Image (tube, rainbow over all chains, first blue to last red):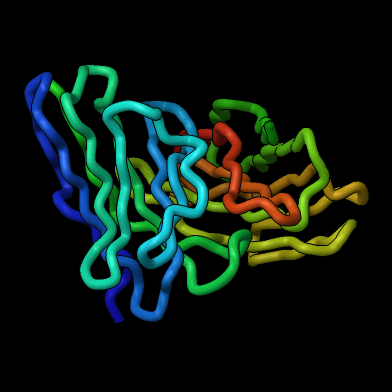
Length: 114
Length: 111
């Protein structure tokens, strides 16, 4: 009974490169959330997706960031032209039902931008 | 927008002492959840409170939801070194699409 799977665990990029973060929700879960966490800080909501739909992207920067959750395959958080300020831990969480239910988090991807 | 404030930001205690963290929302919540994140780990769900004035216990942990459903607290009795970590509250507003997390309280313990 695999939990939420995120990969890679660590990702190093140089400024200007692209970062792709993957998240496979728990089996049976159709709701995916992405959160960003800076060192010693809380979890900042970025985007909420269901299969093939972005439901709420109010926490995601308008430029360089995009997210998708295709019919088949994992959810992808894509950051184009990364800058040093993008360095953070990115957590994906899934839930089986409606918003407000408890979340199951993945182990996160630690993005470091050199 | 909805804000969830959590205090204190840090708490250091001697093993065996009690610990409390407090959470306040700017808006009335449909439910509040608590998560624990161990150092280097990911948040793990602890509990959800739904009813006004609700109190729930998990061994040495006591969770309360305020009467107005805008505040909550987590109290740990007689802390142990395994309690080390950051405790987050997260609030859900009726009709909202997401949980809003507090900044967390980082608990460290002197053995």
